[in-house]
Length: 323
Ligand code: HMG
Ligand code: MG
Picture 1 (spheres, rainbow, N blue to C red):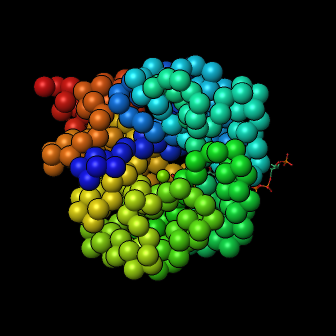
Picture 2: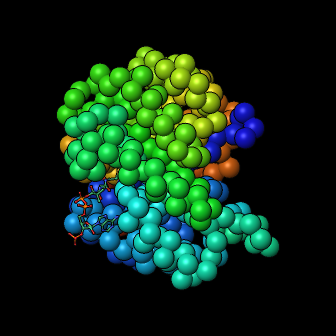
């Protein structure tokens, strides 16, 4: 990555839609993903292989995955579609679909600039209470679950992302989450074979000084910036401030959702991720690049907000469209 290039991981179709109250059709989700793939973004979280009783909005992920694997992306470049898997069972469901379609996880041997690749995300939490609520097990048990899941992904050439939730505040244990604990879990995920780890401010409680402290703890633990992504929810309106801290520290991968969709089912009151439009606007204002069209992203943010009957949470998106 050039030092002025920021890779945006668009998480709207997963982190965003998983928490919407209104039921969303498979067609609308596919249309959203297709539109996003035409903006210049290169990584899109497309769904999660979780039990429908835990997250009903993700129930159509299998069908969406099959469609995405068998249709060329509407872009000039390769798109990585990422799926959240909470355990090996979730990964096995994905692998079954991949095997049935015969589409490899990576673009090796594909004679096209615009291929589809498949990635997974596995997640652990930085506090015991959140681990219990989100995955029904302790942190140690969740890491034990993740180990064979990463190993299986690797045998299938599936790129793996790890998440560390509640890194800057927990809905049950408060804002004082130990940075050393976050660094420890991040290092463990990387040792297990994760290709990058997204450190997540699930509750949006993070502040600039605490983000800085966390990044310093990660650095002190020997974790390279190139192995890290930052995932900010904007509950307290601090996501862009904290993004700036991350950029100054040298982080170049950021997660965001179009229109600021989302929240977290296990984090009461949490609003969506930082909006992709706002993130693009900030990054471009610094003279850095994302390769993503603010104009196109803004139109999608407005369209999906209307589809869901919710307020468009992106300031930059609304301003761009009213110019
Ligand atoms: P559990 O109930 O303890 O699971 O849930 P279990 O192993 O006891 O199995 C119970 C039943 O679920 C069994 O079926 C399993 O077969 C089935 P039954 O025998 O009762 O018929 N099952 C599955 N079915 C489909 N897909 C699967 C699967 N696994 C088991 N993968 C579990 C444990 C981990 C499954 C559950 O806690 C879970 O799904 N948790 C995930 C919840 C979730 O999706 N949370 C939101 C995503 S994380 C997030 O948003 C944070 C993030 O954005 C970063 C941030 O901001 O912090 C990433
Ligand atoms: Mg999240």
